[in-house]
Image (cartoon, rainbow, N blue to C red; front, top):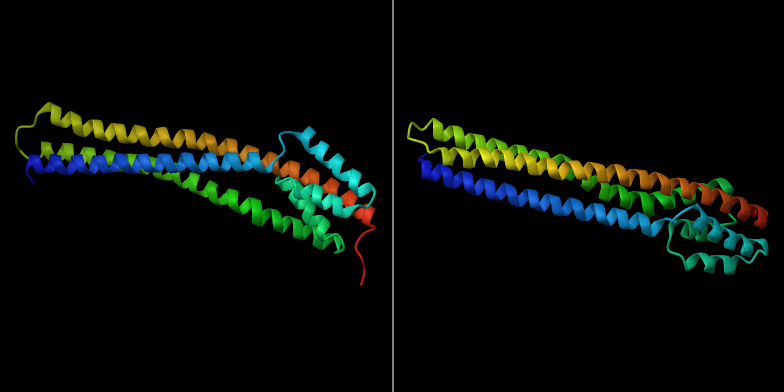
Length: 218
């Protein structure tokens, strides 16, 4: 292959590699932002806010006003109020089945969506360095191809190929490292969300089963 053709192919492949790296970076950032915002929408800002909500719910349960309690939960889109509403709608079933129902609801409506987005972020973390390595291989193949052609090779031509090899690797790492930190932060926030949900549901079920007198036997 002539040097001109080799350079053209190398340039095209390098540009394509840059495009894929940019697309991967944008998609990873989008998924990270979506997960971050989703967690913020689902959880209370802190334990005090959740306790305030639970105190308000207890006021309705204290008078066995389950309709008003359900409406109180319906006005709040966060996960604990919505699970509380589900518990109120199924308060007459066996406590064990009720706990299983709430756990299944949390897994289906919350965990599955977060895990789906996280899986894409993890894919970006794995793919970006591989694309960078692909660019490195392309650059080195072009450089060695020029050296092995037997023709006189300009230093600037080799420098372009070597720069492609180094830049794509650097970009791949520059994408993967922040995404890894983002995933670590997201995992911490998910664990905090789960802890708050567990605490909230335990209090709700204790109050609900105590006020309703337990499940109705048929």
